[in-house]
Image (cartoon, rainbow, N blue to C red; front, top):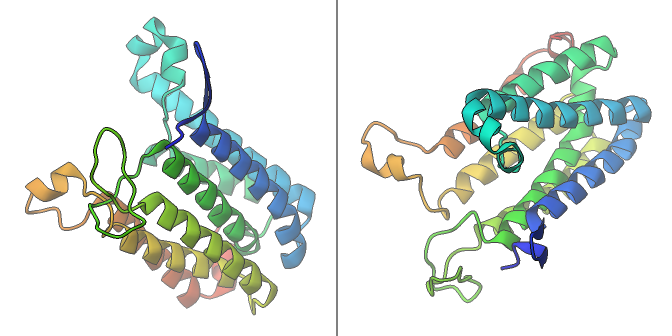
Length: 249
């Protein structure tokens, strides 16, 4: 495992952060190409993507500070280095992005189609980051490609590596689908359905959330619920008239 690319005294350069930054820049660059494929202004899509990323960063930090104000006042720099993207932050980011698309007159489904391979590309980079830092632990395995995370000597499924490979393949599929799409929404519905299915299946190789094994009322873990939600949204996009969805914002 290589959690840090650079570790010199108090200077730490986390591998996950570097890969995440590279993934975001690669996704923004790819959006210039996907925008042209779906007939959108590349500059407008770049700006929309950059706005969404900045909103995700800013809103997550604001929520982190608001919910941990005492700790922030005591250790401001330390708290701001803590990963803070939550479900609430993601929801607020989505709402802000929808408002931005409305203001900039960007069609919803065309924009989401163009963003679909970009999002799966980011997923691939983030998964590689998790693999490098040794997080996203899997269940024990006897397979030869199992990995050991010190100090344990037990071989585990490299779930993060599985996810990175799946996301990279999905990116290529979505790029091909984007070129051959018949109507707006085809690419994003495929992306949601495929990513949801992959995430659901990957949970069978991950170590379960602690409370999912102690409570008889929790049938699925949070990632599985989110994955099912993605599949449902994909079905809604496919079933509803595309014009109705496009003018929903």
